[in-house]
Amino acid sequence: EVQLVESGGDLVQPGGSLRLSCAASGFTFSSYWMHWVRQAPGKGLVWVSRINRDWSSITYADSVRGRFTISRDNAKNTLYLQMNSLRAEDTALYYCVRGLDTPMALDYWGQGILVTVSS
Amino acid sequence: QSVLTQPPSVSEAPRQRVTISCSGSSSNIGNNAVSWYQQLPGKAPKLLIYYDDLLPSGVSNRFSGSKSGTSASLAISGLQSEDEADYYCAAWDDSLNGVVFGGGTKLTVL
Image (cartoon, rainbow over all chains, first blue to last red; front, side, top):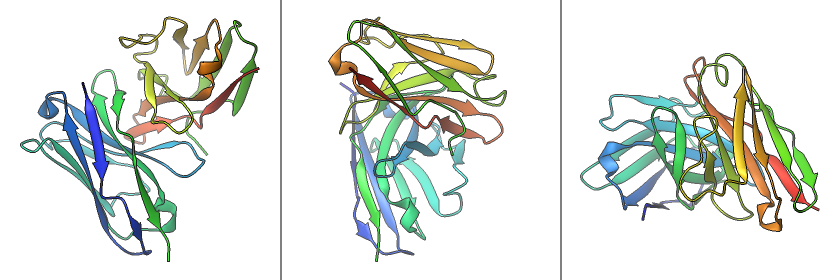
């Protein structure tokens, strides 16, 4: 059974930093693209970033480029999202998501972890 | 403002059929596969349709997808109360170099 379990969410002040982790199990982690998708309270889904199997392809949404860094440790079956210079508008539930490449689809989602940016 | 455009809400009676539209452009739906997601209240999204019209294993065949040009649709037949959820379309966007979602459609089963 595919499982994605996020951790690291917290209340942080504007300008602060946070690192999210996602522990994957039930599949060969190193064979899949991985994504982060977020959802602000009461709002829709917004894609944040994706990384391919060997880090050779990484892309970000314009809203987080230069502030967030996605990475992965295939030996530990773990996906990360380093978030710096956090803003109030980054407040959201962050989902770790497994991705298909071609065609693009997001086939398994974690339960999400809450990040709140507030003073 | 979402890149893909969906109606905010739709409603229909039980056992009826409803469709949800998703409108995009040549840089996303017109050139890439569309996927659909169901988000039940308080739950994580779930993949419903991929590659425009394919159903993942375990998804009911009451759900179907289609695409024409720069628009896509999700159809749900034999509506049941448990289908009440938010539904999102998504596609890769070649211009933005990222995944784009629709704003979501809330389905109410009357």
